[in-house]
Amino acid sequence: MGRDRTRIGRIERIRADLTPDFKDKSVSFAQSASSAFYFAAQYSVQIEILFLLYDDLSSFFAKAGTVHPSRIAAAVWATMEIAANIVEHGHPQPKPDAGFHVEATIHLDHIEIILRDCGLGFDPTLLTQAVLPTEWQTHQRGGLGLSLARRAVDELSYAREDGVNVWKFVVRSA
Image 1 (cartoon, rainbow, N blue to C red):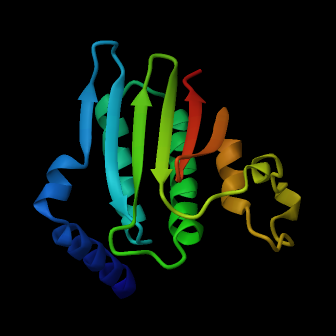
Image 2 (image 1 turned 90 degrees about the horizontal axis):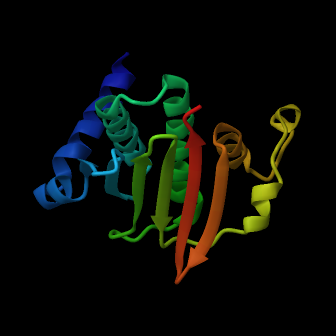
Image 3 (image 1 turned 135 degrees about the horizontal axis):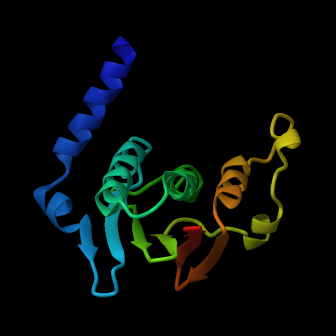
């Protein structure tokens, strides 16, 4: 229990260390005229920040309140897996200003999530090489997070655009 309190205390300190500019301008929630709910945020490349991302996404989906909880869980899970990969593999030696951007849009029939970062590129052929559940314990190369993300969503794509990694995925409402 003491260890959990230490971790929570550290997360709270990270929240407190964010500049007011970061907190006020980098996270936005909106509802557009098309009845879509929109979320956008910028995060630094630190493993601890993943807790903040989870909290922000959870708050966003709770405010929208229009999607089945199982579909929300799939969208959040995939986002967390890709974000963890960005932090762990995309920025092995992060610069102080390294970060990643997350956008989420809830449409009437689907959720769309886009993550962008300027980290190392990714081999898109790995998207088709999913690790089977029976291989997870013996698989040596990594790829478990990507495999889990692929299984959680209905569509997943990756592109490298002008030096930026762009991950897009869709979770259908029904």
